[in-house]
Image (cartoon, rainbow, N blue to C red; front, top):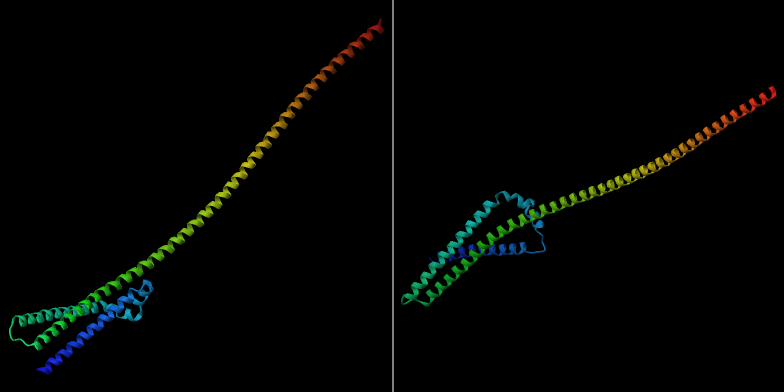
Length: 240
């Protein structure tokens, strides 16, 4: 009987030693994930590595199986705590109990409480670790999408700035062309005014020449008339 009890205690110690080792590993992994020097994209690359990707298809099964195992150990620790607490209560209300039996009962209760805290903390860390990995992966994807959106927005802004610059240059060229056309129109108007002024001056000059010509023709006619009259008078005198 004592040999069976010793074997049973050794098996339980190995089991709880393994659970404690898992708890330490979970605690170390949680601390590593919380280190601010490693960015979420780097963790995301590690999570997407070839080794982890090879077991990623079955990860949800592994998670549920280990979670169920931790829950069973946690419930077993609660059962042992209630069991050994009941034994201590019975021994306290009983008579003639031995000090050795009470010490063994306290030792068993202490181990049950220790196992309760180990299994409970391991269960808590397992859930936290899984949630932390999920949040880090989502954050890394969000950061990647944000960087891509920022790059796309920057490229769109650069393209818009280039278009605005090109439109400004074209607008300046159009304004320059309009200014050149306005100057040409102004010069043509001034040339037209100059030609009209020359035309008016030429018309005035021609009108003056025409009047002078008419006056000269009238004087010429008067002179011819006077000359004929003078010749007629001289012929009449000769006849007399």
